[in-house]
Length: 318
Image (cartoon, rainbow, N blue to C red):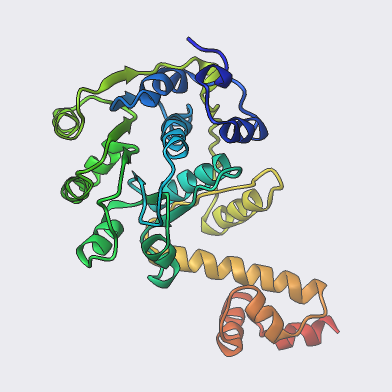
């Protein structure tokens, strides 16, 4: 197998971006996918999360778009479907990093974002769109998203999309992109009759690839268990962990929306208390800085949690 990205004769702009991102050698899944994908073969591939699947489908697709530039403005030429908005945002960020030295434009269509914010993906000339199935189908049904110019279709984490019940939506979108030239399906596993049937219906004579990367390519995961005495102690532990400088990114799972709202409110109140004690900002300034939209509501919440109003605290502080 090839040991360098230089062996694949990629566009110099892509090689430059790879070098700037610190990537000099392709991972196992990238080595397996790049050659057949660059030849235009449909791909059916499985590999564990965190082993370079995203670049494995982005690089050959971007190479195609650069080799055959569009002749006139128009809708997207490459569509990437992901099961979640978080993954869509990750893929979009990766795509922009790889395309930084090219003219390729990347847009995202996901739930939880206003129609106005997604207008560029619907109205401007766009090369690559990364989308979640449900939101994209809304725009297709409203005839706001044009699918006929799609040349490359990628389904990332297809097993999760099927598990989450997106099969009908994905089938509709695949049918809309019927003029595509190249389809790639990536999954953590290729097992299961549902996935096999789905793949057989959308792929044409695919190259089937199963990557078992060495441990050096897998992200190490360290797991910790923190035992709490009670709810207050648990919250204190959580805040301590989140404030740790080594905690650069975090996801906190909670049981209910109400618990989420409670944690957010407490975190904002504790930040407000810190600002009241250490800064000369007014109560109104602190209200908006920590995320409250009403000084009166902030005062009410603060008094309920700390047993005194912000004004009383400032008087006591002197």
